[in-house]
Length: 263
Ligand SMILES: C[S@@+](CC[C@H](N)C(=O)[O-])C[C@H]1O[C@@H](n2cnc3c(N)ncnc32)[C@H](O)[C@@H]1O
Image (cartoon, rainbow, N blue to C red):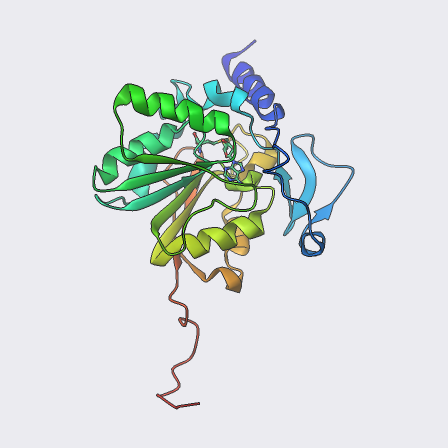
C-alpha cells in the first residue's frame, strides 16, 4: 500500500476508535441543546450525526490514536515549530492547550513560557492526560498542569488565561457553543484564542472532510456576540492548517460612547 494511503488508513482507524465518555463526563442534552443542534440519521461516517451552524461535528479521536499524534513525520507534515511561532508566546504566560491529547504541543509551549509560565493541558480522556504525565516525568517538565475537562467545559477559572489554543480539536467538540462560552470566560480581557484547523479550502490537505474547517466557518462560529471575541488575524503559513486567532474584548467594547451621560 502506498505510504500516504497507509497513513490515511491509520488515521481513519484512530478516528473511528471514538473516545467513550464516562456517564459522569457525558452531560445530558437539554431543551436548549435541541434548539441549537440538529441531528440527521444520514451523515458522514466520520461524524456523529449532530450538526451545528451548518457543519457536522466530527467523532472524538480515541486515545488509541496517540501513536498518530506522536508520529515522527509530524514536524515535516505540519511544521509544529512554525505553529509555535504563530502563537506569539511570551515567558510567564498562562496558556491553555484544550484537547491537549498526549501533549505533543503542550511540551513545546511549556518551553516557550518558561518556568514562570504555566500550560494548562485540558482533555476529556484521562488516558491522554496519563500519557502526558509520563512524558512530563521523563522530560523533567514541571510547568504543565493536567486538567480533566468535560464535553461542555474545560473547567478553567474565569479570567485567568492569556491564551487558549486548540490544535485539531474544536471541530470534534460535542458542544462547541458551550465550550466556546466557557473558553471565553476563562480568558483575561485582551486574551487570545487560536483555532488550529486543517484547511477545508484546500482539497490537497489529506484529512477527512469532517476533520477540516474553513476560515469562514471558524469565524462564523466564534463571532457570536455572547462570546465577546473579535477576529485578530489568520496565520496561513503552515502546510496543512490555518491558525485563526481572536481576541477577547473588554465587557463594554461594543457599547457606543455616550459622552458620559448618566443614563
Ligand atoms: C485529534 S486530538 C489532538 C490532540 C492534540 N491537540 C495534538 O494536536 O496533538 C483531539 C483531542 O481533543 C480532545 N477533546 C475532544 N473534545 C474535547 C473537549 N470537549 N474538551 C477537551 N478535550 C477534548 C480529545 O480527547 C483528543 O485528545
